Figure 1: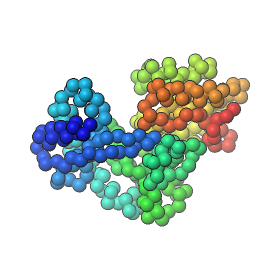
Figure 2: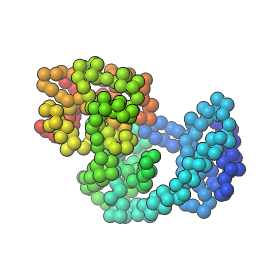
Figure 3: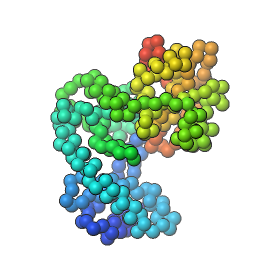
Length: 307
């Protein structure tokens, strides 16, 4: 890897019209997964951009040219012409002032146990076996979002209550990332979900009923939408049920199964299914949990699903 990083750095520098600063970095992401990357910044700019190279390294070992990878990285680096950087800079300057930044605070869900190292310096609140993280939305495009986690130090500096931060975050998240619920059949028809994943995690086959996917309009980190209780309640009302079993498919979506009194789902079977799919179909960095939950529309609460 070290030799590859050296070759890639030289190739990028030789192909750029600008003087670049390139440094190797190790980044801890969801589920304490560690990724090797390079951070590239222009000497006349204040913000760098990370590029993860683990997959590129595999391509390198398979015989691909480093020069081609350097061209790909440079094309991506210069694509936004600094527009995103200016937005990020303006928000970085406002981070210490909660009133200036609060409209950009959003939420995300991760697994507490699997993210001990990742969560160590980040402010979060427990939610079942998960953690609700607070993030600042720095920028967004059709390809994704740029966020930075709210640190323990940052939260302390803001001098606000946890309840205020959560209420602000959930309002912003619902506004910026509206939740959507679609049947698996519709998502398959729209080619949003791969057929192989449908056959692997199909409660309709296992439990004899249909299922629905809850995510957001970007289909990214959409599992956070399980915090949108009003949407869950409307779903239950539309299906004439008293609640919904929630199966964590990944950090990007959860599966909803209408909970009917005459139907008893086996939580052990569900857990086994989730575990198998996580291992076979989902990259570890996208795992959310290995067991299911239930939303009770009468109490308007989400709890672990046991029976």
